[in-house]
Length: 143
Image 1 (cartoon, rainbow, N blue to C red):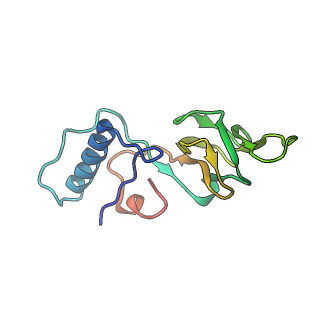
Image 2: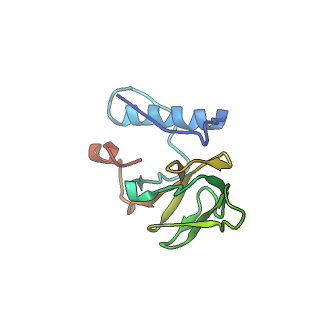
């Protein structure tokens, strides 16, 4: 089975679809499933590990104000978002901070959020390696 994740907040552009399709075809070619594939990628591969610690959830209902952008690099403790509570006249915004270093991979696209829903997630860049990724790198936990 081959699986790919793409889009942000459920929106997928034509460019996103082409990138995902070509990535799948390149992978199938690299493993000998297809005799040919698309031209080599023009950008170097970015290998990211995503673990549970990379996910940041809303501690309560509210409205999200992202303070960083997709693709931004963050350090432990950086402010990722403010959650503005939707109840209580004196409620103060709740800070959502990075639990570790990484790059912003996904952000909630809608403003209103419920307790326990994903605000954003980060990924930790893997060290660069030469050559094609091993089969193990395509397994669970890596993107």
